[in-house]
Image 1 (cartoon, rainbow, N blue to C red):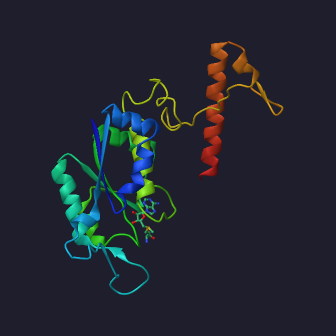
Image 2: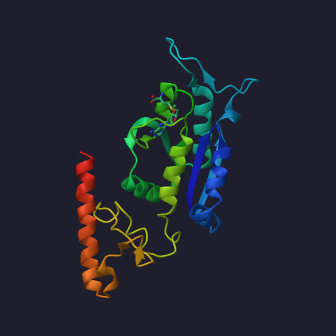
Image 3: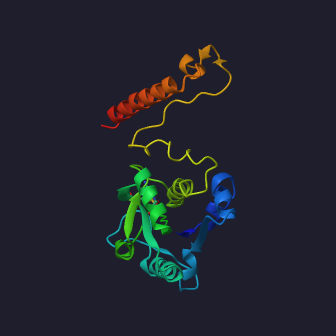
Length: 224
Ligand code: SAM
């Protein structure tokens, strides 16, 4: 079974997203297990402090090393196979290939930051630093949730149709999905491409491939 541990100051953030749709089904079917660990529980002072001012001055607070490192060590103790991932804008960029890698690993721990981020010494305790993209979120939780969702839907047996994940964007040869249409045949004057109504499966497949390549080329151009 795929096992994710989430180290966070806001475990409640995950309640609703994990209790609907695909993640819910995966958890109910025992294909995935997600445990949230409250970092604050590893603080040792009476105020349960997890943050402090940065040395050298500057705005905001940082996550202190003691409770975060203790939480990471606890996650490793609970699951010795776990691969610990720190969510941070300066990490390597998350993508579909990384999601597939985590499916293979099957044991991951996602460390969510808050405030201005982590004391740098915490980095020595993690296996990898991961970014969702070149923008700054207010916390690691939305990033962890995106990673989790992308991984869970790839787990064998999670999606209804065996093909749906294989045909997703970025999966087959790294190209994007083709355009999809459903009923009605005409919506506000816009027609479904006639080839899709032709019943000719060879032509349909060729059209889809051509459209996927056109989209992918455009995507590459927009991402240069
Ligand atoms: N001061 C940090 C910086 O400029 O890189 C930003 C800290 S951010 C407000 C707080 C936390 O949100 C980070 O420690 C990290 O866990 C998470 N976070 C923010 N943006 C992220 C991103 N693009 N990818 C992954 N995690 C992110």
